[in-house]
Image (cartoon, rainbow over all chains, first blue to last red; front, side):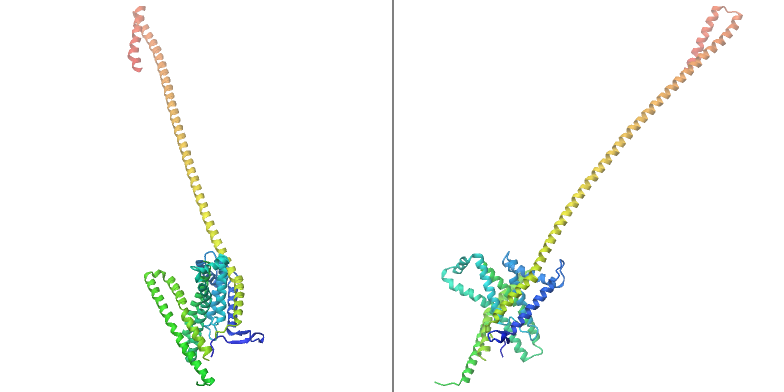
Length: 219
Length: 87
Length: 166
């Protein structure tokens, strides 16, 4: 029994192009988010109602988080950071529905996002300081520490993505074990804990750490 | 030199992997202690400044999640050992 | 379990597409809405401030006008009072003069009447005296004594009667 992502089918029947259940659920999550966004902003009113209220609240909260760490960059960084928050948040929460696999319980998803944050943060750092000036930053405080700093930087996306992946997959495994042991009573509070609480907290943390990484690279 | 049949070798590898997974989870001590320490400090902070409760809890959760990293690494290693090597 | 494969690329593409669509459908309209709301609130506050100022100025102006009007009214009243006072004084003076004039005229009339009465009386007395005297004379008085007698009589008469009337 493998609790990881299951290959559902192969694209064009090619063994190198597997389509996994996590990928399918990621698509579903994306579609749900887009439909929700479309519904919320279909007719914007000056006095917000219902979904529009929720959308504005969410976007503004994320915007404020970015502004707190990177003053003046909120508007530019908003699409990237807010998409991370929304996508990971909903991906972590959908596991609450029985039979749905968290798209984030797949190392490909989390490592992809982690590498994305890694690239964006270093791009931002180079944009701010220039390539040479940025590379010089790795030689601080003494030049001997250069390889160590580089290794530290390379470890960032791995720890970043493995944290989310480990949390989600660990919860999934424990719930799976409980399902096989006591399928009727225990899974409900465990679902609430692992999918709602841990999921929400981990999504928040993934986003906050993404902001922090980018902010650190800009310093 | 004792010759083992392939089934026996597989069994030994499985046993070693499962044992290794169990040992890997000893790393769970670290995050446990660290998170408990963070929570204790947060309680002290809330006791001193009850009005800053929300901020303290958010910061505590963030710090704990980062401190959890080592535990998660061990969990991932244990999972790999169990589900990819032991089977 | 932890095998990396091509799905990572799909996930990243997924994410980028989601980011693009959300940028179009969510962030842009929401941020625009927040901006426009901020602008509107700012504008409203500004307008309210301006209106308040205007109202304040208007109030001051009205108060000033009211004050001026009151002053003017007071002035008019004062003027009217002054004029009334003057007029009253005039009337009183005129009345006094008139009274004086009437009194004088009456006095003159009285004087004249007295004069007339005195003259008449004198003539009457003279004629009566003449009559009495002629009666006496016819008896025994000479011309000279006669005249003296008349004169004395008249003088007595004047001193006794007319002096009193004067």
